[in-house]
Image 1 (cartoon, rainbow, N blue to C red):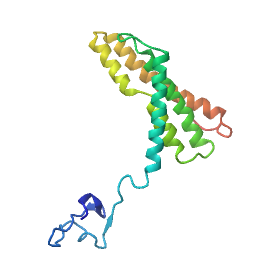
Image 2: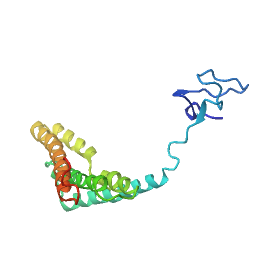
Image 3: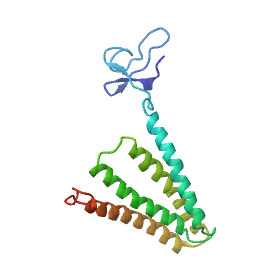
Image 4: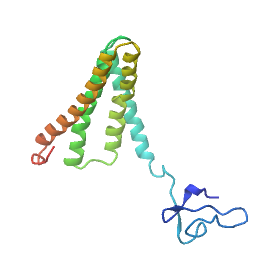
Length: 178
């Protein structure tokens, strides 16, 4: 039996028929009637995208972990590594999105793999929030505010600047606005 999420009638959800066959009474007639159609499962056909996002996320998270090993910060130190990782990741996404949207056509799975997977796994705005909270809990509101503000400002500036420079360097994109 179909669930109410599986049946759609011109913007309204139709209730499935009960055991006796009576319609649920929603607009558009009985389920399966001319106005009703089956809605496909959410993930149908999304397997390749989910797989490349997962693989990219594993690579990005591994790179972020490696950055933490290369540039360690103590438990009560200013979180420079997290700030740097987020700013670098934002700069890379600025370059990447200009290249794939304004440059050569890209494979349809490249954006989910690299943009969502690799860069989503590499950047770490959840750690950004935890680090800001930790600084506040340590009674360091000045460094917490500086960290939270600097990360956002630097990340936004990085994505904007990287996109602007990429547009200037990308053949045929010199006249585009940034």
